[in-house]
Image (cartoon, rainbow, N blue to C red; front, top):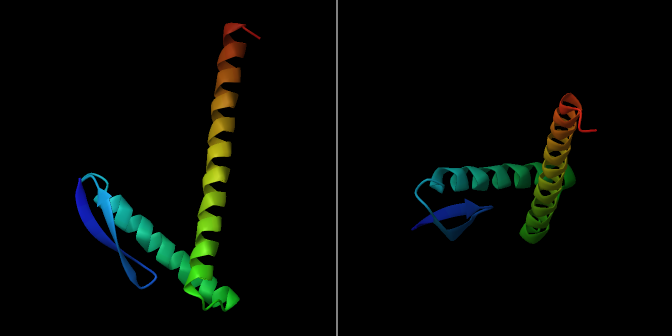
Length: 88
């Protein structure tokens, strides 16, 4: 593990990461900053906590949406395999 600093909306945060995940963590911080800037522009939000709350909500929604579509894809593939094998 190593400690890196990531900047999220103007504040530095220490994060423990493995060397393999350090660049992904920095990229994730960049994505949060981009999202915060978009929310700030679109909704004239000035409170950093509100911006970060909106980012968290958006990212959680995307995670749920991605997870659901991933599960549906797996289920579709399993159904196709079962049909091909004559199981169903």
